[in-house]
Length: 365
Image 1 (spheres, helix red, strand yellow):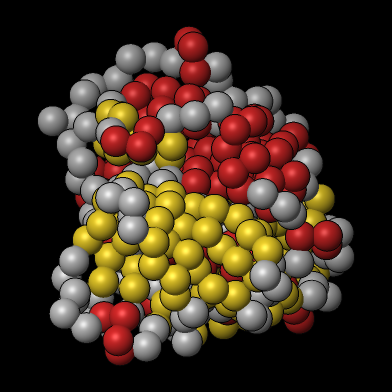
Image 2 (spheres, one colour):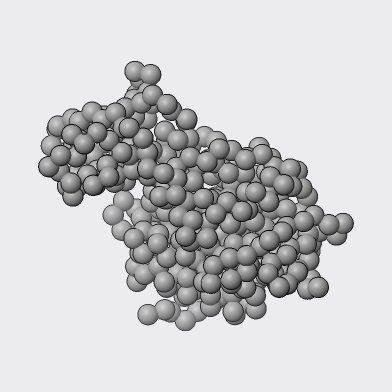
């Protein structure tokens, strides 16, 4: 039976960053990915351009996450904020560029270059990545954990679960990490679709399918009172309404469990449109999942389970979600690094190298 310091389950944004972070600290780690290639959802982000983060301060980002996500993510984001993430990518050979709305992308605007960077870093730091490795069992043992996957069994002192939410299941996010957490004593918050469009009455769509309205403000009204406001674009689709202003509204509605609400859409030309959505699109189509492992059962300072010592979580497997614009990738990357830093301390390893003193590496073209 193989043994290692750390098993990372999930080869998405959080899992890949965790693997590289483990290599930076000199930990012996193994990343397990159920699909035949890692980073399937990462390749889809930002329409395959990979919106890595938003170029704002960490404190402003935490405000934008809102309750209860912002307070929970505070230790993660403060330890590795948007500016540090951009410096990290640059230090490892991939410059970033800031586009409209403070959105940060790789300068190539190719998600594949981000995935290639992670693959190169894992290889350079001798961190093993096992694809087509569906985890069949995660068990607590006297000395740590035993993970069974296909034809092999691995033991480790620590496990980091980074399996994502339940949206886009074809990418490998099928909720298995949440189920293991439940078996190990955790509570799961109900899944709801976040960052998704709404189905509406046909009359709303009539004659407008394909129309996109820029610089739109959307008021979310519940119980006759304005609850929040979002900004962005508004798009009329065959199935309903979407666009960043709409999807951000859906996330707020899901997070607050609103049942009775309407959207007041203020167009740039001064016109106002009132919509009472029929329903959201299903969670499998959402950009992010609201729900997952309950936050009050996780130590936000370390991301270790309060129910099962040695078990850690990062990314969307937890009940964390953010607005569009790179917030969710930032949360995945930051939480992964905090979890690995915490594990590194337990293993007697030092901290991460300062990004200010990071060596210059070759530049990707």
